[in-house]
Length: 106
Image (cartoon, rainbow, N blue to C red; front, side, top):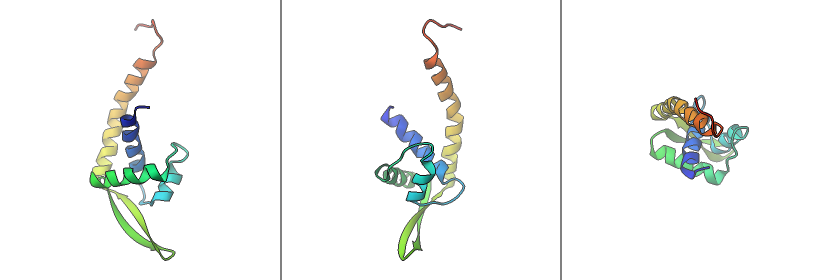
C-alpha cells in the first residue's frame, strides 16, 4: 500500500479509536487490533503528529505510581473524521473503477 495513503488512514483510525472516550497508547493499540495491526513504534509518531495538528490533546494521569498519557480528540480531530467520511465515498468510487474487469464498459 502507498505509504502516504496508509499514513492518512492510520491517522483517521487513531482518531476514531478515541472519538468516544479518551485513551492511552496501549489501549488504542488493543482497540485497533481487530481492524489493523499497529505497533507502538508506529502509533506514537502518529499521536505526536495528530497533537501537532491540534487534532488531539494530551494529559497525564497517575496510574499505579506512574504517569500515563491520555489522548483526547479535539473539535479539529472530529472535523477531520467527518471529512474522511465524506471523502470515503470518492475513494469507494475510485476502488470500484479500478476493480472493474478489463474489457467491461458501462
